[in-house]
Image (tube, rainbow, N blue to C red; front, side, top):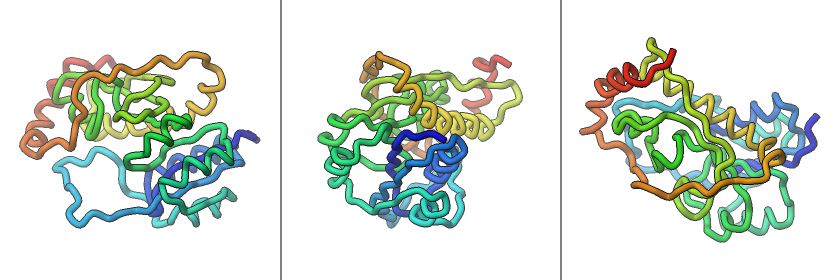
Length: 232
């Protein structure tokens, strides 16, 4: 049984990454876990990519019920509440499973852990896997303490995703996603073992969603990328 006090920031809505993180915490024996659910805002015209690369299917279970099923705690919050909540509760680790932009006061005064699906600082922002392939950048995952800048802060760990000669775009995307979850969970122990967390360079553009005009070229780009960078 692990006695660390873990906070998980999520959305008040069924969410695949949150479910995978909570399943992982339970499997690793963490007992003192609390989910803090931010209001979920449904967009009227959500962006629909040509190629989805992140698993989005999930159990139709809201985080409150998910927490109850695992004997974890749950609280609905506004993002402005979190600063004081963490001041009082003093969790050993705060994991970001789902959140939008977080207030500077919060991220500069509490060590929030993110797992970004890219080898930072090479690809910051959204659709990182797609932009890495498009621009011949390394594909990886970085766990880090966040700051007020997008996908910056202090590095906890950084790993490359292995690329195989028989990979498809989606098999590589899923392998990266699994590493993203694993590294978020591993960060809980790493921050106790490590004494130095180097600053991540804030270089390059912060990418937005890949426009469909570029997405149409993506699979052709992937074949070339895989042939160039596959190692196994």
